[in-house]
Length: 206
Image 1 (cartoon, rainbow, N blue to C red):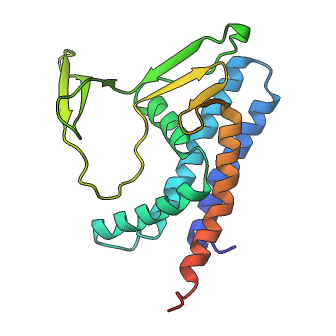
Image 2 (spheres, helix red, strand yellow; image 1 turned 180 degrees about the horizontal axis):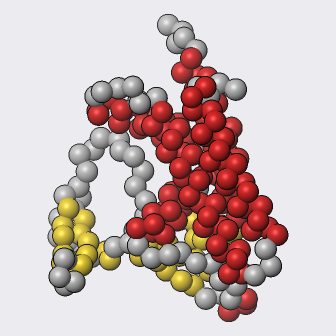
């Protein structure tokens, strides 16, 4: 295994935790318990990804160099690991905003939406706006200018659509079972990380 030795055990620990929670979900009979185990599996999967992404730059004192390494990892990961955006968004909204819950609504197919921010219209190209509560609770509008054009770490979505146990994946234009999303993400990550570090070890051919 080409994963650097100090990274190997903590990475395996996170991936094993995710497998454990997803295994418990498969054996649970209550929709409520299934939802708990699914969300419990999201956290170690995203933690494993972030741990591997930041590892190469750990010894660097230059923040820009560390960011450069992280972006390089992310660019390669996007080619190999499906549903990065969905896993990141699940974790971000559940941790920073409202708890994400999956429910068995049967044929009714009730759609739930979690929003991290409220999107607003803007007047200039490349500008974005959001409405967030101020310290006193009143809603405030903040407008942000466009990105610098440099490659950046993929940001979580502002919202997430869920029906029963499925998440709407924008890239596929389809509803995908959240258990498929998490299992495929974890399996791909487990294969990708050793390959990524193995390629770093190989001398580049001129």
